[in-house]
Image (cartoon, rainbow, N blue to C red; front, top):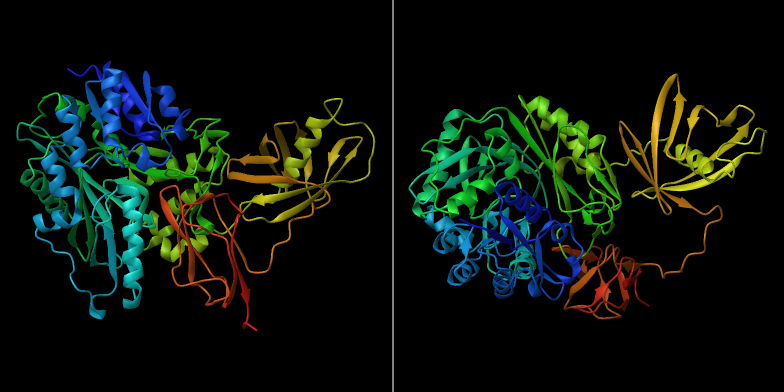
Length: 622
């Protein structure tokens, strides 16, 4: 029996595994980088061991350090979570060689399936060799790892070389393995997968289907189980292929077999030899704890011959610190509050006061809703997210709500191109028009010497706010009367430092007000508006040369274009600098055709948001 378990991971998956360990009476050990010294998973573990450094390559990807940490803490088992070393056969062997229990499949099964190229060969599917015009579009894909990193869609043959180079660099950074391959890119397909559990006694459970078609940058955003609208014969085929993948590798533990479904046919993509981020939707419909099953299988227990029967429907949404309207740019900063109301499961690696940094994935939490029907589960999750209080960095919360309520999703007609078609509409700013007034009234009440309003008429007062993240500025005017505060077009019913009630066109609306320095969050049942309080007189700003390229986020310069130097002509859209932030690579391109008059970016240099990277002077050179 396992008595003490180390999780070789961080964030919400570490917290998730710890929760099951507490229920089973197993002591827990966390590992942490210097950047994670105060992280939630460290605080929730019984013991914690430092991995010196901040970059993944120096910490969470150092299997030797993780094994030593387990030994130092007296752990007798290691759970890899997902990402990092979870699909690394060498790490699995090192764990076993150290006499520890490995909560995962045999190293041989990881080797057979963790490389997507070898997995395809094993399942009778070959990647493309030499790519021709007739093969387009194609997908460049990392052979190791997942999470959308190391993936590029190529629609023009001349873009293939750059895509291969970028994918190799991103894969090597994220997974320590730069191998990539090319496969056909199926337009309009659905991403469908099968969760499996297998024991050491010959039993394999196919646990239904999941649809994970809503993706940005090839990374899943919304997942659900069961996958809606599949013919029973197709489900049977998916289950059969998933069981076959498990049996040919003598698999044990949790795994996921992924497919692209198009035209009523299933195309094998890969097998993930680990637990998936989206596993909670399977847990909800089958009434299982997959982590507990992983542990019991590792201890030698046998599964029942048949899996339990699925009931109802579950939907999961991944809440990210990112700005979908700015090409999904990850965001950093302090999480002041994260609260999703209602009967919704929330798996998170952050709590109030924690900081989202630049080194790791930007996922804040996963929200999961379960109900007897799909429509009820979707409605429950959308409503809970709409009412959620997520204060701090810009998030994708509004995008999630709009996605869940989009007619295509509601009718289960989505595919992997959903955000390519609808991103602009789903990310259009829609702040509450009365949020700035509510913020101004609450602020004035909170600042009053007497804790309320003075009983006399006054001249109008002025406050200025900026809506985040779109940057729209607002001027708010209100005044005090003998009856209380007043403003044009509304009736002020009630004002306090943390709430305001306004009557607008005969309807009373309640606003909750939360302040964090100059940032103000205004909450309503229909959503949340983030504002930044501005000085009445605009402050002078630092002058920047026209055409200045600024870092859109804090990160590390990983590459500068080889073929450009100061004084050289560049064309609009030409990539100049590559930044890596939160395990994703971002290209900084020339905003217009002109002359590169300055290039300040240096590979390996850490930059803050707004740092000057380069200057492109538009027009012909003299």
